[in-house]
Length: 205
Image (tube, helix red, strand yellow):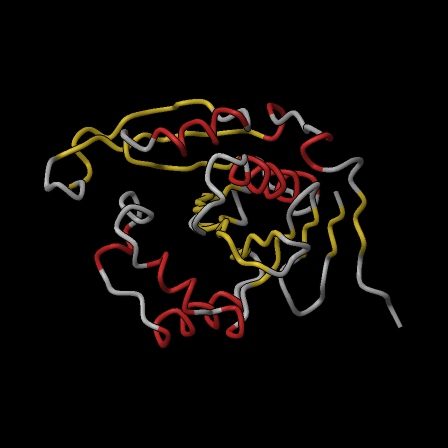
């Protein structure tokens, strides 16, 4: 895995099959807007409550580009050309060295290929080995079994339950589950990452 640390942009992470980098406004395609508004893709995401328009997504992308401590990674396959999902680091706490992580793989026809697991693994590696975070957490709907598997494959442990925290898309109450991972528990899978980790810093003039 290669980690390219960049001065004015979020880092770029290159794994066995994926490239994780910033999402630019030129990446916002009709295909992206289609799956951001697909009820099956977004059934466990809070964005489902608001239609995702070109203008709304562009504004979000611009806002995230100026938050380097909380990177919003686009997940790209096909050599880094096709945007298939995102991994986002939120709620960064510089004092406690903690943050929250969320993710979605939404592009049609890429489900069940392990992209979510690989992308989250790469971001965990970056957060712990480069950004110096101590702990990552992630929350999800109880019925979100796909995301539960991704967290558990990456070593996260179930830490708690917020009973009846959410309304699901059927209008029924459901629990929120909280997962957590501390840096000492993270076990890098170098086959998944595509080899040893190399960190490349920007050239200094």
